[in-house]
Image (cartoon, rainbow over all chains, first blue to last red; front, side):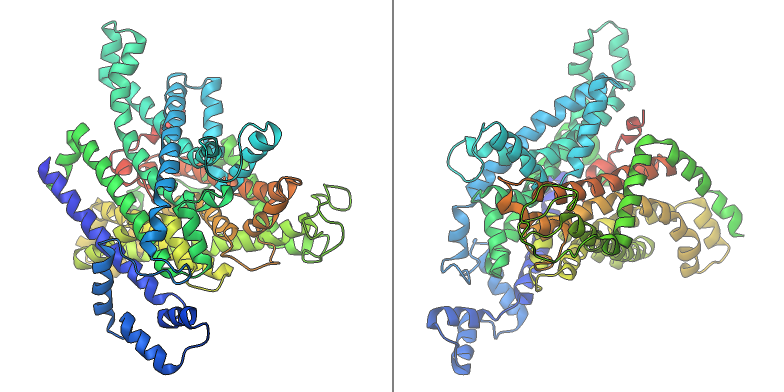
Length: 314
Length: 311
């Protein structure tokens, strides 16, 4: 287990290092000369060539790219991505108040998607070809086909316009969380329902389930004690991977609902071509995604020894 | 010499595949929807009853005889905009799909076939690209360019090839061990010939399934980015942008948002249904390799029990 954990940890660190190169490249390719951006802001008029050269020297953008990268990396590992080009604050300060809001939204959505997806998948599998099964499969199919910005407006129309049950836009109370969290949860819930259904069906056909049923164990005990325990292990992985959907989805959902989180900030940053901030977002999203999946992989290996043994051959 | 080699894999005849496909009601619906949208993309602009860009005083009209889908906030005919936009929205996704398929197949084949350093380098790159949540990276890359549909397409291609390359590499690796490839190698065929004549033909059908399934995802991603304002600038009648334009009128006149939203959803649904159908018709065993490359890596390696899904 320790060996497996060490190997996974190393591969995550390597991937993260690769992501920093990618993120740094985004900054280099970004339109606009950082020196010019900074100077135009502070001077209020186009800078002279001498001023530009001096500022480039000060910012270090006249140095070779590998040197710049190492300098940038040294800052990035401490969470320092430099100054925002537009906002007049440090990138980390702009991010720090936004991150908890996105985390709340993503966690609520993750919880909701598990609460919706897993029971629906289990019921669909145990009552195969029943109405519940057909309806949930159709629902999962639609859930995977609707763009989140469209489901967002459908939900707004139903719950905020027709029934006036919850507030629509903004941030502040728990009620504001309902619609964005549900919107964000629907896609992953559909994937989870579909996946849970097929793993439960598969496990229900296994010998040990038939044995348990044959020796007279009650139906519910067979399902909960023997079948689900094994069927839900792979589901953990899918749940972990859906974190990527949640982070990507937060870009759109936060925009629609005016939820002032990281996704909303990142979209504004893109519109302003504020690349230091964009870099901060990309690295943040990748780090969260990689760490969550590392935890998922490790817990998976803990639950299912076949996984950690599998790598020994290759 | 190739005939008995090819026979070693159970390649269903195309007539057989078509028959199976048409037998599956869900796939039929998918095929009908995809056909409808392809027709829209090809002939849409010439079918538009009115000028999609013409601003009129008839703002925010509900559907009527003159405007079958109503008008938007600037009095433009929504049906005409929808028909004209089909080519832009679906064309961008299709072009991106062709490019990622090409890049993915090329790099995946090279990695899988040659192995060694090339393989390690490519797969490390794939790991890095897949480590960033897709839409976040696509957004950052798209933002490097002036807002346009080309920018959206480039942004998506930069991230989307990686999943394909990984799947194709896996297929090629599996293929390399198959008896008919070993037989070809033993009979003295060159590396290039083995790759072109024996390996690639067997990679084609899984890639077709993958591309069909991913087409829906690409349409979603394209419209997501254009919805965020990174696509063609106004007044271009692209579907995601139309939905974005309609936002401010949504509370009083929801049809301006629902109509482009429904068009996107039905197009995605059509490709998803068709992709599922083709996958089932081709070969159940392909399912293991294919299900959603942009994510379910471990799930795929742990024997995805999707075969139980085919009641």
